[in-house]
Amino acid sequence: MSNLMNTYNRLDVSFTHGDGVYLYDKKDNKYLDSLCGVAVTSIGHNHPQITSAIKKQATKLLHTSNIYGIKNQKKLAKKLCELSGLDKVFFGNSGTEAVEAAIKLVRLKAYDEKIKNPQIIVMDNSFHGRTMGALSATGNDKIKEGFAPLLEGFMRVPFDDIKAIKKQLKNNKNIVAIMVEPVQGEGGIQIPADDYLNNLRQICDENNLLLILDEVQTGMGRCGSWFCYQQYDIQPDILILAKALGNGVPIGAIVTNKKTSRFFSPGKHGSTFGGNPLATYVARAVIKTIEEDNILAKVKVICSMFKDKLSKKIAPLKAVKEIRIKGLMIGIEIKTDKKEKLNSIVKDAIIEHKLLINLTHTNVIRLLPPFLLNESHIDEIIKILIKLIKKL
Ligand SMILES: Cc1ncc(COP(=O)(O)O)c(C=O)c1O
Image (tube, rainbow, N blue to C red):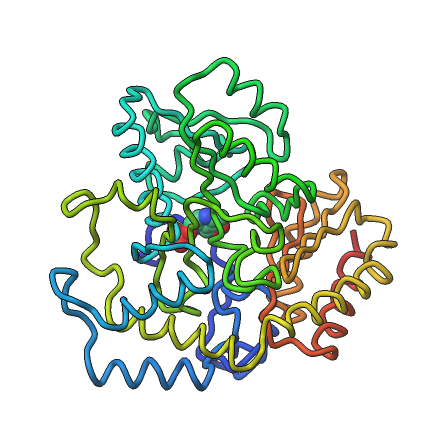
């Protein structure tokens, strides 16, 4: 019997070490990690540059406080602003905390504009985290069940539905922001229409709303550009980052433009650990590695290779309904009548075939593979998937 609280259905597998795209258990069995701890270890396990950055900073300084200046934090903020085209950064320790910071910033904007009952438009099927604010923003009633009263101030509309947003705006003067994932991750790798983000930007501009992009899953190269929105030639007012920013060392951030950041002033928000010398040094090393090894270009190549092989070999399988792929976010939707067996198939992938994948949105096999894959890894993944999906 474990002393851990019952918050996860854990599999009977655990790992002792990792190396690149592989994880190893205590018997030295090798697992191809095609999930990256859910979009976290994007540049692989035990990456030499990241390991050496952790060691180097650990021998110098782990923590001081945000009461003092933190050089690594300043440098990382500068880099994130250069990469995103935005101006100011607040650091936390996770995605959900970054979402909270975004919500607080929106509330302060509304307060400044004397809007007493501010509303943020959020999407059906979205996921923004587990703390009360982020949970309230999340568009999934199942994971919200039992936690009432939730935070007020969120209006839900269908994802990828511009008309629904326009309709809400006609009837409500209290809407102050729109928050959206550029690709819904937990929601089953849902990719909106090509003009969706551009339309959202335009609506926000025309109605004095903040556009908040939750790129916790899509960001840091996962979609083939630093941030997914860069493929649409727009900018958000608030960008939310976490997961792969530290490649496994916990860190989250919001990056905003000046007109939005001005609502924070000393005392309005804070974090003991946020932006600590260790996490920010490691995140700098992550960015440097991605830049120096030209990894974003590689993601694009791997993505098109994957796309090609998936459409030739997996799409024709009878049980497959649809394949959705954006960069290295891959969802294989299985026909609903096959749902029952799906869980055991995914378990087999992990336990029997030593391939780490997961199921999301009940019938979507999700792959979030590392950026270091080569063609033979892709072939190995496809071979296992064919074997398993054919059993459905
Ligand atoms: C889009 C998105 N936002 C926020 C979160 C919450 O991040 P964290 O688990 O680091 O709190 C997640 C986690 O899966 C996510 O996918």
